[in-house]
Every structure is written in structure tokens, then in C-alpha cells.
Amino acid sequence: MWLLFFSFFSVSAPSVWSVVLLFGAGGGFYFTSAAFADYSTVMSAPRRVDTVLIIANLDKDGAAVLLDEMRAYFGGRGMKVSVVSFSGKPQPPQTDFHDLAISLGGDGTALYCARLLAEKNIPILPVNLGNFGFITEISKEEWKDAFEKYEAGKLRVGRRVLLQIRVLRGGEEVFAVRALNDMLVSSGSISKLLRLSAFVSGYPIVRYRADGVIVSTPTGSTAYSAAAGGPMLHPEMEAMQLVPVCPFSLSYRPLVIPASEEVAIQVDGGQRTDVMLTSDGQDVFPLRENDMVHASVAGTRIGIIQSDRRSFYTVLKEKLGWSGGPNA
Image 1 (cartoon, rainbow, N blue to C red):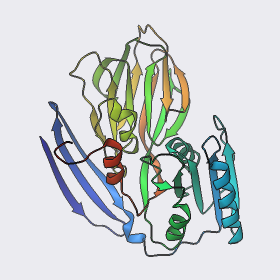
Image 2: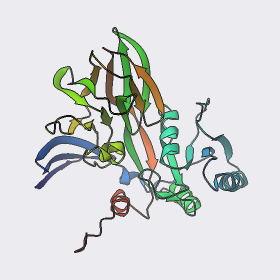
Image 3: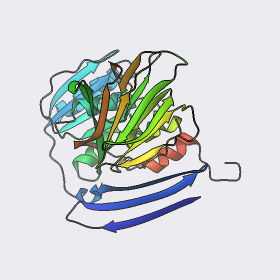
Image 4: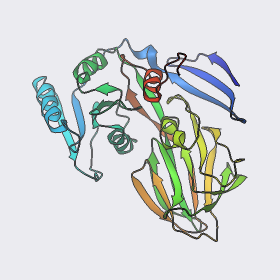
């Protein structure tokens, strides 16, 4: 059974949509309310771009050639171009403010770019060098057209929430990171259950026996969270998800949580394996028994420039092979 109720209200531009979702599938029900901004109202104003930052994953086929093409194009228009390129695992560089950032790679490169620029309020044009990702909607053949439409004010910038993740050990913060997709508390070895306690805004809600627990943003709801059975959320919703990974009991269900709440995961005592925290599948931090991992929606938002050739729903349909016909 599926039931959706939408309520809308307007404030000054951009307008805000308030969404309440109640849906059930496979015997499980989820309830959430969330708000996301409609930035289509700012599409008419041209944007001035004087400085461009290109973040390029040179492990991707064609990245070096496209990087040279971009340098020549922006340089020929008198724009200042800065480049951060890498092969393998990137190291965080020092970056100044730029009018625009271009992520050249795949979804992983876009995630790295988002964390790098989280505090700088720089919009990101994500260019995909492989199959279309859920974040990187713009192909390598479309990048110039997409940039010129953005510059002319014809493409919207979607605002997406980030997770602010902190690890407390004995009451002291020992690690902090931000994530656009998700965080995962998991075992360091195969086939070992973890004992984890989950809290929402200080209230204890469940003690898991599972392979791990995911806390996801709406952007990350189409990634590991979806593979673990979590619902898919529109990437501009303001919410989080709490999703157990291969739980010992079928009664453990994913939970959608408003952005105003805080999620905490405690590493309980008596573990029979190492425990680790992974953010966006890239940053790893080893955990100890009694550590508390806190996740909340960060105060800043990341701006992702959207293609006008395909929407989130188009990508979702193509990725999941939804035909809608009798053989679906």
C-alpha cells in the first residue's frame, strides 16, 4: 500500500515545499515530514563566472583530454582556472573561493568534491565520464552546453543536505567528518555480527544485532542504503535515514527521520570483531567499544547544478530498469 500526502506553502523566493510521506511495503511503514527548496525561481538571472575550479579524477578514461579541453575553453574566455587532479586516493588540497567547481569523474569524485567544498558555498557542475550516476547527470558531451546554460541562468541549482558526523570517546571528540551520501558503522571482518544501540535525539530506540548500520542523506538513499532495503528519497528532501544492514531479526526496519533530529550509534561492549566507521565509502575511522557516533544534518548545503535533459526520476527509472509495461 502506498499513500502520499503533500502540503505546500510559500515564503519568499525560493519557495519551500513541505512534504509528508506515509507508505508501506512488505509489511513495513515509514512516516516522515520534510521540506526542500524549489530553486527554479532563480533560473532567470544570469550568473557571473570569473573563476573555475576543476576537480578531475585522472583514473577515468578520457579525463586528461577533457581537462585540457576545459582549460582551453575557460582560458579562452578570460576566466581563471584552477585544477585539482588525482589518481588513486585523493589528498585534501587547499582551495580558495571560486565561482564554480566542476567535478570530472563519477559519483565518487562528486562526493569528494562536495566534502572538499562543503564550507565554501561553491556550486558544483558534476560531469560524468562513465554511466550516468545519480549525482553526475551531465555527460562529457554536454558539459559545455550545461555550463553556458548555467551561466545564462537557465539551469537550476539543487541544494542538498550533508551529514555532520562526530565520534565521541569518553565524552571527547576524536574524529569529525562530513558526508554527502552516508556513514556506515560496520564490522572489520566477514560474517561477524555487531551489537549496536541506536538513539534519536537522545532517545534509545533499538539495539541492533546486524552486520552494520547506515545513516544516509536523501542523496545517499539510492546508494548503499537502497541495497540494504532502505526507501529512495528525493535528493533535495531534508531528512535522514537509519537503515540496518543484514539484521538478525526481520523486525528491524529502516526509519526516515526529520532533519531536525540527531542520530547516535553506540558501539556496545562484547564485540567479537573490529568495528569501523566509513563515510561516503572513502574516509575510514576505527571505532572502539563504547564509542558514540553522532550524525546530524549539517548547517550548510551543497549546490548541485542539474541537467535540463534528465531529472532524478528519469535517472531512477533508467538505473532500475522500470519499464512500466506488462513485463516490468
